[in-house]
Length: 162
Image (cartoon, rainbow, N blue to C red; front, side, top):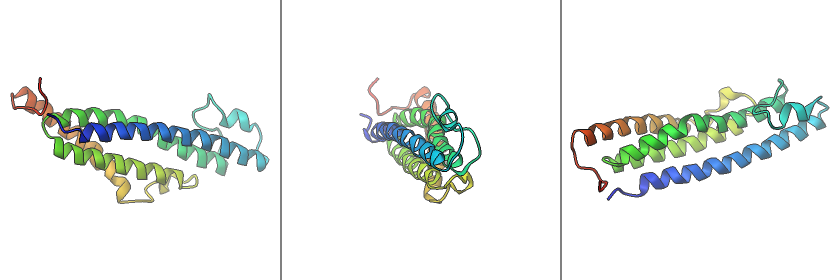
């Protein structure tokens, strides 16, 4: 049987992604209110949905856009990390569990860095080296997923009962 650790981490990261989306919604409202308070013009047009990112260059726009960017970045990496993690867990469950956990922890700290960078995206790795774990876990899951596919095609036994 395949250990439940890699899928459990992936599912947990999925729920965290959903929760992070709520954080983006709160940030949209918060920074729009701050922009109005500071006298910025056309705030609702620039900040509110259907705009993904707020328009302009004010400090409030930059701060919100960093939080939105962290959320968008999750969608650019999560699917590949999850599929690689599930494939890798079929033959290499312990290594894949560690790699998936690295992705999840690093992803959390990279998003936290984006949220706390006050609009300066170059400071998103504030929690370095922990935030870099996301990239090690991401690449690890891709590599382990490909290795698992090769092992399955070559006839090696898997943890799954096929």
